[in-house]
Amino acid sequence: MKYIEKNTKKIEVILMNTFTKKLKGLMFKKEPIKEAYLFENTNGIHTFFMKQNIDVLYLDKNYKILKVTNNLKPWKVLLPQKKVKHTIELPTNLATFIEGEILTIKEK
Image 1: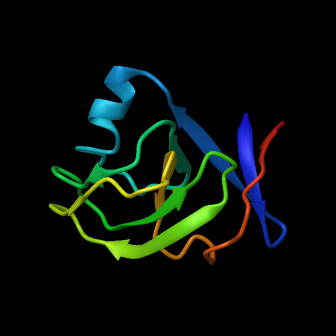
Image 2: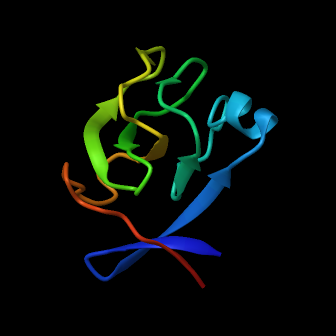
Image 3: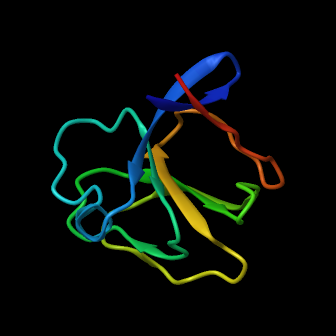
């Protein structure tokens, strides 16, 4: 299991590393999101067909947070961002992340 540790809290990371996983993402997911979803090599997202709001972290190639979007509602598009290499989608208010912070994804 991969995870991010934030304020002594371990947040499980689900790797979205195939075309199908990236395409479907969190669409149609009815149960509450509890994990962080890492979309590698993805610099823009949409929330079409999603049932809940999410927070989004935009990361560079070193997993440094370049931008944070909180409480993004369904049916929105976040266009590709310059310098962004990866994105993470996670439940709103799961943890507070700030721009400039470098994430370390650990293996359990």
